[in-house]
Amino acid sequence: MLSIYSLTVLPTHSAAWTLAIWWGIALIDIAMPGGKRSPDALPAGTRMTYFSTVLRLYVLLQLVLIAVGMHAALRADWPTALGLAFSVGFITGSQGITFAHELGHSKSKIDRVCGWVLMSSVCYGHFMVEHYRGHHPRAATQVDPATSRLGESLYQFLPRTLWGSLQSGWQLEGQRISQMKTSWLRSPLAWSTAASLTVIVAIALVFTGQAAIKVIAFFVLQSIVAFVLLEIVNYIEHYGLQRKTSNGKREAFGMMHAWNADHVATNSMLANLQRHSDHHMHAWKPYATLEPLPGPQLPTGYAGCLILAMIPPLWFALMHPRLEKLVSNQPLAQ
Image (cartoon, rainbow, N blue to C red; front, side, top):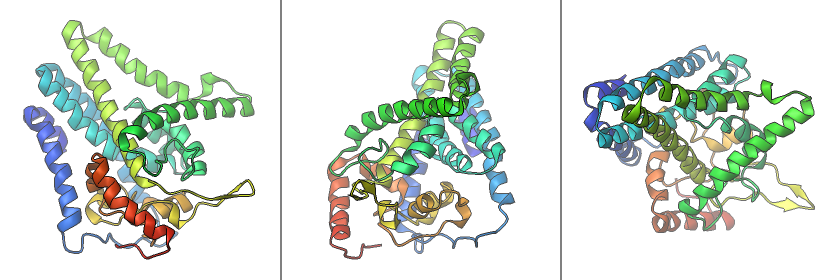
């Protein structure tokens, strides 16, 4: 609700507030006493009604946020409209895509539909195919477009993963359609893509001239900010980690194949996504039940690592010694 308020009352400051909140969370992760430990995981079998309801209610909040952002951008000058797009995109990327990811792992059809809605609102529907059928089987391998390689900078990784994930998502959906003997008319990926394009066409029909261009630019830019943020997180999650292959058989995904963090400020906002080893090893586990496994540990939470990853020399200086310790089986600093 604070985000919607800032868009309607203080639109000229929304981008600055977004940066301040982001860097503030990173600072809390680093400096807060006890902030490196999130609450204990809930026992398996705990009823998840409250936790799933929070995720489902967020879907409506995100749609309202985007609509309010469009309205504010329409009345704003161009610099302010672009700042609004950045602010909204940071929310739809950090919260929206994270929640879509969790909903997509649910066994509930309602939850998965909610995940598709969230990803359609940021023009990245193929994630709902590629992540579950592509990334999870292939994570921490050379063939996974969402796994960053040793020595690969963020700026080398982004074009590779953006194109590779898009290509993989459509290929996997095509294979499913062929195997199930169904048609593209029944493909959720096709419908998601159509929904994203329909929003753009609808804006062009409702508004005219500069107004249409400005609102379309807002919608497209918030989508770009959102899915680029997702891919930066992907860069962080498996950087330099590789599963071994022996006699043509790939090593099973284990605790040592994902980077983890248990910083409470970031974990509280990202549905325990930083407990990433346990998530990959038990993909159906609800986020509240994920365990903080003693696998490879990041130097800080995702909020801080986003900043570090954007400065390749600093990122390499912090991460490569950690990778060397993993290879030599030395304990990692927490």
